[in-house]
Length: 176
Image (cartoon, rainbow, N blue to C red; front, side, top):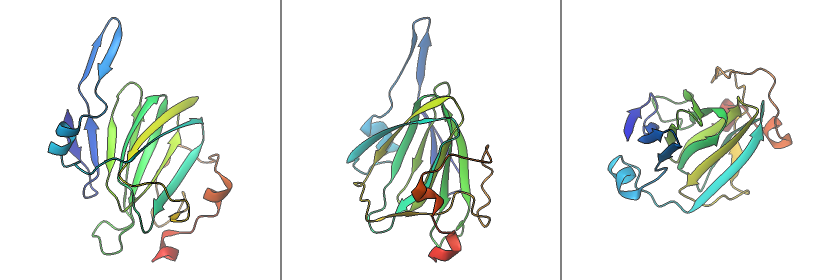
């Protein structure tokens, strides 16, 4: 397993060992001792799986009182995945990291609790998986508008399909 640090503290790109042959491939998507040695040692309490079509953008979401760390992967298709630093005391506040995750590169992203997260689908369909360190609480969830000009994410699409909720999210400066 190869671990790459990013410009955001604690956000990691993980490249699991993938064993390929003429039959296909095999990889471990999680192994507690190996991930703990990489600093990902919180207990995971919930696994989620979403399927979305091309052009869907989900996010940028986070929970205020019960923030979730997320270990993210894609088993089918391709997404552009984004983490945003939302801690006003952080030296990287308002900055983001974006990476393509897909069913060919098998990359994973570890996003510690305290970051906003979102993704958009680049393929016809994508199956998106994430392990969470805390339970989802809809009453605690909020987010940031996907196209916030202060963050200026270089999304690889211009007119995403958004939920009604995501269309109403505030700007980062409105959350301070």
